[in-house]
Length: 352
Image (cartoon, rainbow, N blue to C red; front, side):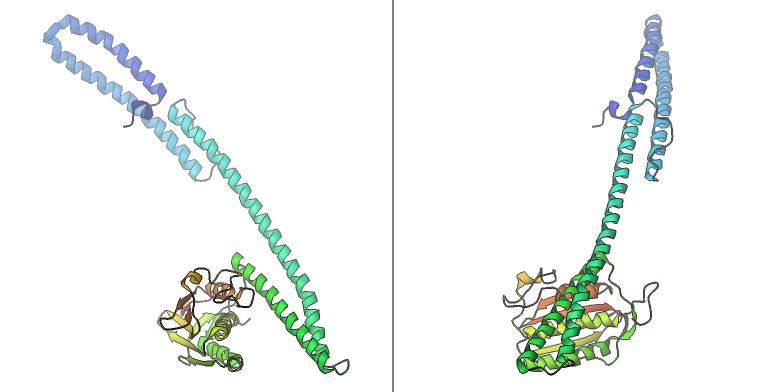
């Protein structure tokens, strides 16, 4: 239960006690003088005195609460120094102390934000420099390897050609890995560039399947797709192609013999489901499947574990979702859901 000391400031309590003490003297004297006959008059006098004292206390409390409320409103509006008289009541002192603490915390918060922004700027500058420094030698390695493979400087022996092919494959893989790492970093910080245009997602899906047919044939996997010939949405076609390519190639890698890509159009969404009949996904792996550098399914899984994390990022920058589930019979299904009516953001539009 709230006590009187928690509601009425100390100065007001002192005033109230003094008023009651002063008023009790004439009331007591009057009671002795008039005896029992004057009880009614005494009661009326006591009621009037109480009414007057209540008005004094209420007015003082009202004034102090109003001043405290004004100071709180000023602090909520962002003022570091709240206006209004400080007063000498407990409520005023509490508000003053809270205001000082508020101003200190606000200053610390602003300082922390400033340091965070400076750190982020330095990080972006460092990543841009590192990306350039890594790209330059890698592009040189790949470029000169292509010149050697083209036999511009003379014919190669069979052994030399195998060596050149090995260098080209390793250089291309390393360049892709570097690009993946930096792209994932950009997605994490929300700086990955996308350019949405009105595109036929069905055509993108067909192209992805067509390009993956060669890989599927070499692995003895049957690859087919189902869906309408037209399905438009505002998307970055390059980013969506990359995401779907990752899913289809991943399914072919782990398929037991068949992969099916299905496009479905609903009033508000487009869904692309990539289904395989491979070994499937263990329930414990579903939670960590899209984490960077996680390599699932089998211990022999190759790669750095960035493909699904990047695919998730590419889908999410479009406001879409990516989910995975184990099939009831065998294998797994990855489903991409995209908003069908999403318009380009301000400043976007046009081809990449």
